[in-house]
Structures are given as structure tokens and as C-alpha cells.
Image: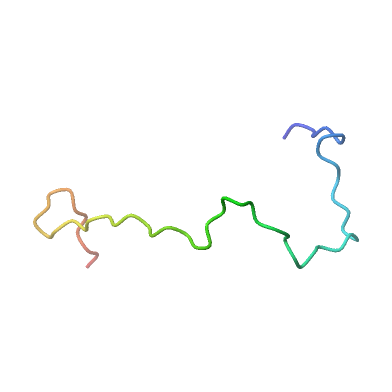
Length: 54
């Protein structure tokens, strides 16, 4: 792994507390995630479907 430039990536200080409040979200951040796309399940007669283990 290449060495990281300490001016760009300073070392992590384990004694520094992690804030509980992440801060304000960006204005264009949605309140909820969009629904995931629905992927059709292959039927039992589909030649590309994988058989269930015995």
C-alpha cells in the first residue's frame, strides 16, 4: 500500500472524541432512500435458473 501524504491525509488521533451529531445534511439530501428496483425471480422452467440444493 502506498504511503499517504500526511498533509492531505493526517493521521487519526485515537484520543480525539468522535462527535455524536453528524451535523447538517446537504440541502439536496432526501429524507428517505428511494425504493430498490424489483428484480424478477426466474421461474422453475427458466433454463438460466439455478436448481435448489438437494
